[in-house]
Length: 108
Length: 114
Image (cartoon, rainbow over all chains, first blue to last red; front, side, top):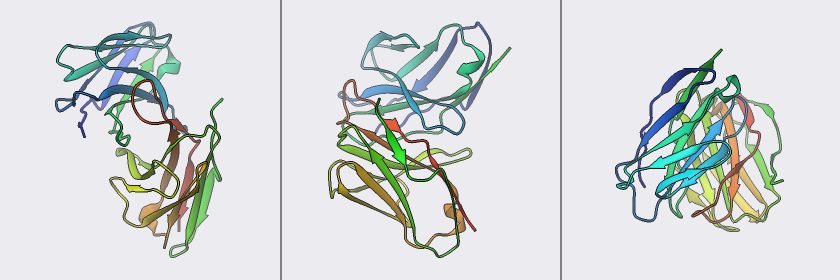
């Protein structure tokens, strides 16, 4: 199972772009990269998933370099409501293992 | 909307009690998961199940057991509750894991063992 490493915390201001990078050096060929968001007192919710290159949806973009040993979640123009913990997961058909995540604090 | 429902939002139990945490999903998902979440430790997988009557240990199964008699229901059992099992417990379900699949979480059960 590929282990992931991400920063413990990040600070930003409203309107800025935030990039959170996750390292997964042991990612396997068939593994997918997925990001979840968790607000206080709630369960995590799915944000975005990718396999390679770039994926974009209405919430975020996910950049994955060719070697797939890392990935970057990009949140454009964050607002106060984006304050949350963000988890990077790598899996195939195996169990879902969450790490400690990155706590993003957005300031006005 | 997919719904994962945990039977209680808050629970207070005494040390040594047998505790049942129930989780029900309504989307016919194959996979179900139990996690606990503690400050600074993220979400840690206790047990998961990929089919009825099937179970697999996660990273911290000690002191817990699970039951999955029906596809929609996954129960976490604390055989003899201890104070170090005071935590937030989160249940999740998903279809088979792979491309374009996501896990859906319940609202969590905050268990306090006194």
